[in-house]
Image (cartoon, rainbow, N blue to C red):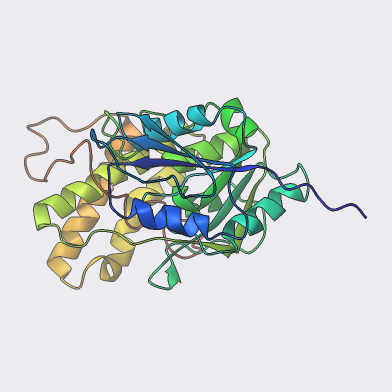
Length: 315
């Protein structure tokens, strides 16, 4: 029996200049399978000073603006046709030594898998629990997350890459959901996105040091993105209604303070309603709730996804 040919791996990274990017590159250099190229979309507005001369793979840095989705698209474009499979780590992610080798083996086993969802592990636990070794559908796909997902380059190009009007730092109110939207387009075109919770990418977790108005605005901004993805994909009305109610069904998980938990649930429900409607509330309508910045730093923390089958967390 012939040995499957491993695909050429590439990594597309968007950064605002965090020092943690050096740790990511060091973890990649220590991998049992090295990528062909790592491309970095620099949205910091300054020289990154990466010092890449000693790394055992090609590193290309391109200037970029406009948020994480545009940055990832710019980074993929800089790869050209030199890779077969692409990963999208955050600039503060790290890879266990065998991660890229395991990913390459999945794609190398046959042409049937177009995308792969792995576990994003933070503080020793997965942020979202993926189903075991199966194909994701339009409901379970919400448990996938960008820094732990991989796609064939041809598939990425066929579906048009990341929508640049979705995601962190974009110029619209829809500040999350870009990875879910991308995978949904793959699935809707008949592609297979496989779930492999046994393959891990390490994440650093989310910021917890915001004041209350900033925290509420952050949750609402990412909830808007969640609602908008439900708007633009063919989900039934009862599912869309469920995501509005979901934050209120898990108040104890939001915050130990009942008052803050209720405010967070309200921010999420309102944000999701805005996304579903495709518009934000007017300035007069939103005076009672902090508005969401167009560049909120993290995604809707409960995943925003009201799992229709009651299958655990909202992701």
